[in-house]
Length: 261
Image 1 (spheres, helix red, strand yellow):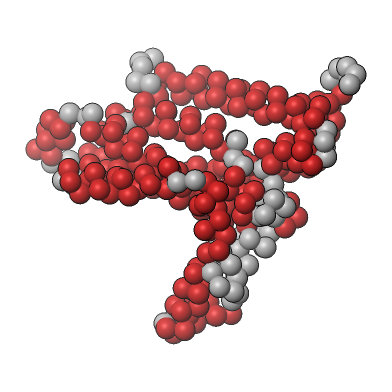
Image 2: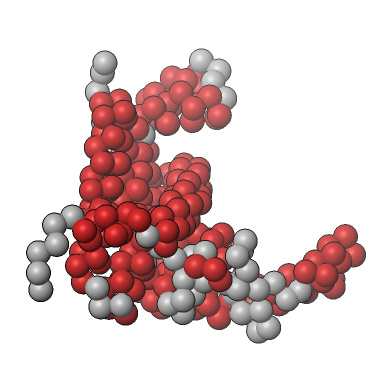
């Protein structure tokens, strides 16, 4: 081994595959991250409005994917996405054969979810969102349960609709919980590895369209045995996560944590 200064960082930044991997990570992170929170907030509102027994049962059901092994989840969805025997394609084929208005679906078959450049990212993002939405539901449901019910009763007496109560009471008072959940999503999505790696069988997908930055790091270190460059990529990822997290704290931290300007 010999000291090479910043050469590993320069080589990593000059490698187009690193930028491809980073772009893929950001795209899949946005697709999965936005989906998680868009689904989690309304579902949490519905859960809080149910009785305790029903709420606890549904919360456990929603939370179950989060505590399930990522490898097991990815392997199951790998079979579900199979073009020939996967339940997703079989269900779509059944819809196309059963309902005349949906007969156009038969022209699409078989859909190669994990072999198509345009479909592999949404497929991976769907799996990630399915796994982590329940975790965010628990966070938001906990936050909603801390809001005094008197506020809702007073707004209801004043004639506020359910949408107005949600928009003017629930969302503003959920800001600290949203800040926490989105921060965890930001950090987690930039480290996305297991789901895309298993779903693409370690290949990165067609034309490397599902290669993430962590998979690129692993490939560089353990397949190409360039530990110096892999370490440089790891440091670049660490710096990127710190910068984005700090930027989020700076832009939204005070309001997100319930502070006042």
